[in-house]
Image (cartoon, rainbow, N blue to C red; front, side, top):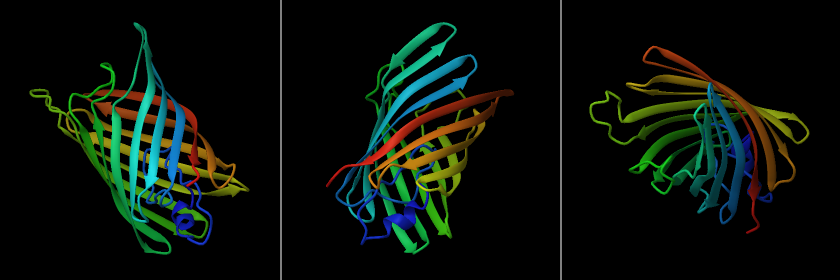
Length: 246
């Protein structure tokens, strides 16, 4: 999403793709008003001895210059381990995103997304899981930064000692590298009482094939710590963002 906030402000230029992927956070920018935009990707995550392979889809639509619609899911998720492998479809996520410009170099907003229990048994939540996220985006020189702070309301689990609230954050820094290439580094984390903390660092490269098509690839390394157990995970993936014709 390098310099996406500034790019979206150029109303006199043809619309361009505004990638949200591949990071955890969501940039303070919307798809062009009246345009559909599709994000698709492959993600691999390993937490020894487990492995997850998934395909992700996110459809975005610019309702106005301040409001956007989001619909996403993982049509294929494969979980592998010592006891074999299982596959399924994730729940569907539906949301609204509000963004307000505070000047030529700053934008802020909020995003409300909730999952709906449409997935296969392996991956389905019994109840909707809403997440409310505050967004902020900054541009200076050739740099762009996005900050997110959110809270997720999970299903009840009586007697487990695990909180229903999970708090998450992310901070990213990106800039053009050379020609159509740009790079991003993102730090993110989460905390949930009863499960402990998690943190991740992600690095990605994006290549703008055209104003409508952006390709990306990333690697990530994370750590979680809860109940005296420390786990490390590694991940990588690739994908694209495509802005459809109006």
